Amino acid sequence: MSGIIELWKTLGIDIDKHNKLLQSQGSYIKEIVAIQKNRPQKMAYFDSLVTESHFKRLPDLVNFKAQGNKIVGAFCLYAPEELVYAAGAVMVGLCGGAQFPIADAETILPRNLCPLIKSSFGFKIGRICPYFQLSDMLVGETTCDGKKKMYELLNEETPMHVIEIPHNPNTPHGRTLWLKELELFKERLEELTGNKITPERLKQSIDLINNRRAALKRLSDLRRAIPSPISGIDALLVNQVSSNDNLGRSTAKIHELCDELDERVRNGVGATGKDAVRLLVTGSPMTLPNLKLHSIAESLGASVVVEESCSGTRYFNRFVSPKGDSMGALLDALVDRYAAINCACVTPNPSRLQNVSDLSCVFKVDGVINYTLQYCHAFNVEGVKIANLFKKQDMPLINVESDYTREDSAQIRTRLEAFLELIIAKAESKMN
Ligand code: BJ8
Image 1 (cartoon, rainbow, N blue to C red):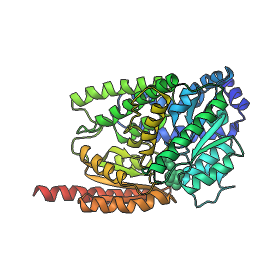
Image 2: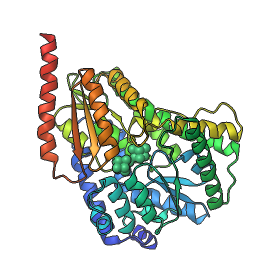
Image 3: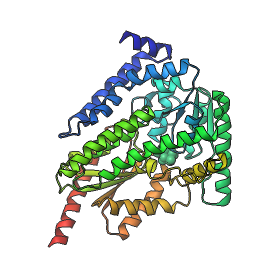
Image 4: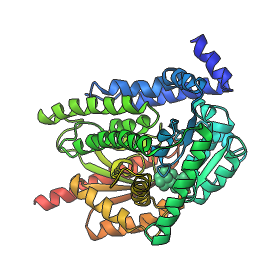
């Protein structure tokens, strides 16, 4: 233990705050995750990533850096991780999902700002997150206004590269801009690492990341079963923690979990009974340790079976599929994938509506939770279209706007309880 504390100190971590974070995060996760019954045994690995990631992976990354390698911190699905790995660097996710660092952030940032932005910023300025401290460069993107402007402040702490995202990527000039931005990011990574990104290296890293996306897609597809073999809490947790794990190892561990879930599906073993109300959650991302909505819904007996979000299907529903081995063909394939990300920050965004509608059918859901983080205008306003879409389809939908505190938990619980009763009454009236 004393060795790891010394390591945290050398990274400039505020040990006092860091200890408090570990304590609060540990007990929060235990209260929500560990109390579930009949969990898949292979979840033990992912639980350990939550409780031990600041102990276990950290020394590996410190050694990696000691050998002259670089670490790139990212905040968004738009960060092209294939290029990062092709440059011989490692990418770590720095999106904040904890309430803990927000007090530090609010000494600088306005209070009425999305909690994800404040939490991410607070982790850096409070010197609470070792992954932030290890990052040699940060990569941001021009998505929402709050993030963009926060990146300008972060740039004063750690060198930052911001990718300019075309807000309508489906036009010829949108694609041209994406390609140019990928080329610029590639150059910046080559400069940072001193490594040339060759077509061979890029092809290799595309395969590696496609493999992780495929493993997560396999996990998601298994949740189509009735009953779902895994709770929404556990599935979300896997998505949240695997982004900061070693690539190859996390892919293998997700497949091991899926093998166990395959078996559960064959034997009809579920996280809930067959009659549980099946829910789709769509909207703002949920970053570790934000499991609030899932834990409330599932404590009421519902089963969250799919998340249409960046902490769910949006990460793995598209692969990079090159039509050749040249650098041009590989970059073109990256443009295809990244320009197709249907975050609410792009406009217009018809593919998200189509996608969320398809998911509701494929996963045979009984209701939809349209989830927005407080002050996230993009998802809040686009939520109007989502609500209209499901109204036309006669699919029950509830809007939930929340933050990272627990203050609104009781209120959300009461509203979800009524929502589930409504869904059950609707199903019963159809049967009569
Ligand atoms: S691709 S969803 S990860 S930007 S920070 S938009 S919650 S107000 S995180 Fe996102 Fe990339 Fe889009 Fe996905 Fe709203 Fe908060 Fe902005 Fe946010």
